[in-house]
Image 1 (tube, one colour):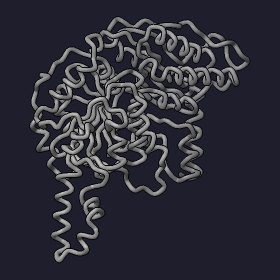
Image 2: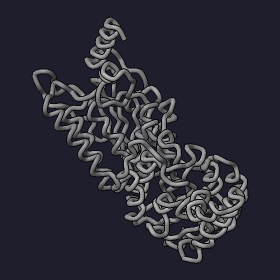
Image 3: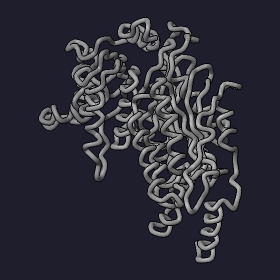
Length: 471
């Protein structure tokens, strides 16, 4: 960007901030109309105005609409920043309106949806607006794990308000939205790279979904709420899943296809699908019960556990634990990837998340479960309530080709046919030390199951821990 382009861009931004140009896209009320069932929205604080200052009168409206209503028949509270009013700038009273509606949601124990579209704070109010910022962020941090919070970044989300999507349980971004703490032009000038767009937020895990339109974004919000809540079963609890055998026989298979075979009606709402793709996280239903699923994905980086995958999984376990959502873990990994500068603390956090979670935890070992990777993916020793395994599972301290050679080093060296001896040792290792039967004999695996009965047995295992009122 040359000097002329930078100057033109700055003039454009200044004009927008000063309200000289109209924003594109729906208004705050139009977005709320898309969200709520027809005729159910009740606005709160419609007459709230800012304090008079030398820079503005008390007649100036607040750039946020707050209220509550029904979303598919369920009570939901929401606020939507309105870019048509001072570019949605946050003022003291703007913040007060948001605080009021959030506190109402907490008291009603109901979900919250936030639509963010603001260029920052109202500069004319100075420290009062800054204090309002702090109050919003503090409150939205405190409600993590208390009530479900879904955030929709509809337009520009600038400055400290960009923390809000990180506090939310689930974040949706419009593809043309911008989310940044430091202005993209500043980052571009200093580091030569673009940040703040939806693609960057999706790749970093900050956004769980990216949508083309406001209507699509609201549909994603509703899909999250549907997955989060229990529902009447619409799929046969005894449906067989023999197709999984063919799926996992393919090298580098996509575990999402396996999850579809297990889940009610094949539906999963994925979390952070653009981030750490070697591990899949999401919400499914099993016979109507909402469950979190965490699965190694051999289609990406062989399903190895990287620091980012551990971070993704640990956050998701903590989310499930907060709302007492059972966790289903599907294991197929050689273990931890060899990473330059890998963060051991993030890797350890995954094991710690499983060990400290009070949620129901059911683990299914599909294939490889080796060493620290086995222990970190919901093993019996680290907190799993039930551990099942396929006959194809391999559970051991090391992969067969490594472990057999390590244990039989002298035998291979003294053999007249080292290659044949090595292959024999690998086969023997797989049939003995790495066999799921060996783990079952020690009580580390509760059952070795027929692949076709996967869905049936996961549901029956889950029902052991659920009372009728939990369904």
